[in-house]
View 1 (tube, rainbow, N blue to C red):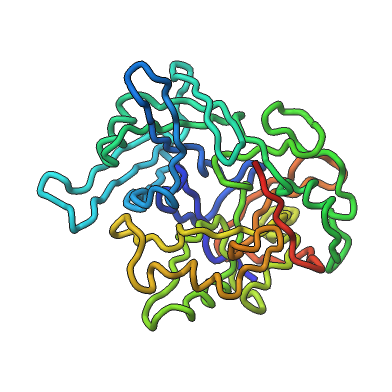
View 2 (cartoon, rainbow, N blue to C red):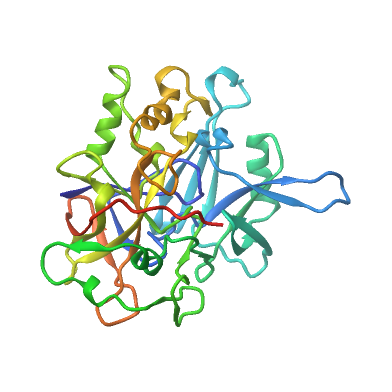
Length: 358
């Protein structure tokens, strides 16, 4: 197999940024989902401020925002394009430039939570918040998760949790799985601690989401002629091409990326990605799609509810974490680029079972 596409999402739930290459770190690709938007809700001026997480599933207007990264300048640009049906002369595209790694020593620290996993984040301030608020039409806050700040991985998604729940058949030669240790890197504190202490950014469940082109092509066959499944609506980090059959990845326990690094980079695939209505959003209107554009989730419901832990949600893709170095609790980093060869280094005998997090 080969790496076909790579993506990041600097602000969670806004549109994807394609990459030609990327560095692999324990918390994901650099700049991936380090920012997140929250809706500010208050019953009155004196009442306590409530932050409601904003994701494209519940706020489809987020599909109207594109992102573009200029890593050489340490910046990224967000562009808001109002839907054509509501555009006026004074409501054309709006753009905002932000630092990929903003200085945060003067920013307000706020407590935020995503899926019950808490974090200390930084409020990006009035000017930036006002820009987003003017686009959405309600008060919002953009927060930033600095390097060294992470969220706790919940449920059985972390490698050690998943590894203890299932047995797998190793394929190929001797693998780092045979010496998998009981310790994982603590991204927050910089030292080794017991399992379940892996750290993630504002990604839902894991640092990496891996899908295959073959599975995406299967989704396209379910749509009306001429309509293609949009890979970015599945929000992957890594898209692979060359799998033997659609949904073969359901049984993958790990993949090895054979990049130009001295050693392969191994990604442990711990759990299935369970899908929601975000697949049905029309990015041109910022609303749920009409016709077949709005039925992708329903079409997957027919035969892709294959995870016994979440039997009402269809499965598409696998969540992944960087593997540990052999004999060491540290994760092995490296790089990946489009065209790199990838092989399956571990196959599970059965599909994994998602354990509810939170």
